[in-house]
Length: 166
Image (cartoon, helix red, strand yellow):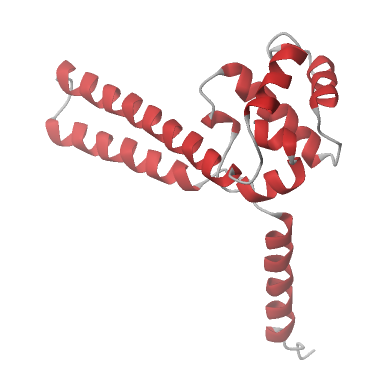
């Protein structure tokens, strides 16, 4: 979060596809990330003052920790250079928390002995598969990449279309 406050434009470009708000353990951090993401997508300047203002507008002033907390977050990070590494650490910890949760659910199902063992294994496999799939989905992507893909699709479609005989 501190790196995003230091260099929001480059920061969001570097972490797109790595982080989502759900990856933050502390609710205040989740709220701060969502507010910064909203500001970034609206092409608004992001700094401590504008972020606090956005939190107030969203009704999240108290949940975001206030100006002093946000200033502290910005000052704790020496630079935005390692933002991808920081984002990956947050993402990895989030995956571990989700794995612990899924493991606990699987353990609870096994101890309850409700249903056939083979059915419980199927459910457990699905839960782990869903976790692995979620790891790769619902992430921001660079608009530059999306536009490039759309353009390539349009070119392919225009090259493959043949005029219809009428």
